[in-house]
Amino acid sequence: MKVKKFKILALIFLPAMLILQACHSGPPRISIENAKAQLSPAIYGEAMVFMTIKNDGGPDVLEAASLNVPGAQAMFHMMKGHNMAQVTSVAIPGGKSVVFKMGSSHIMIEDMPRGTVAGSPFTLALTFQKSGVENINLKLEKAPSEKAPPMNMPSMD
Image: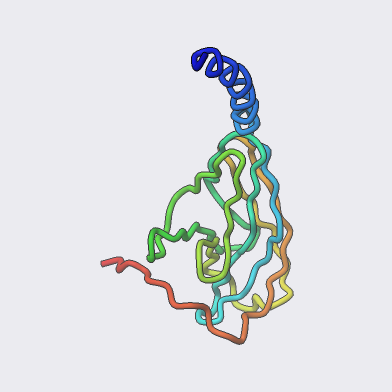
């Protein structure tokens, strides 16, 4: 009797699990939400980009970020435990979202030219391994008046 119940349950749940797994496999379906760029409150010529990268499909990898501002560079800063670390890529799991926010993981922009001020427009190009390039049009926002929470950055020595 127990074996029969197990077989019935397996016939019900196995297809359901396969359907759920299929929702997070196949090609990624990337969307960018709530993107904003903010001048650094502490360092002249730097800014941070915050957003949510939502993936309703299979896994992908954010491999690069670039912008159309002469001389400026974009890099990924990710939280590793209680420390901030620069990384070369960011995994975007299937069926999940990756959040870049103040005081946590974010995209850092360095070496912005003199005269770059709040209101300056630019395009950030995010390059994904499978999804290709997503262009995001942004305007720099003024640095917040309150200080960001402290972050532990590893020494570069």
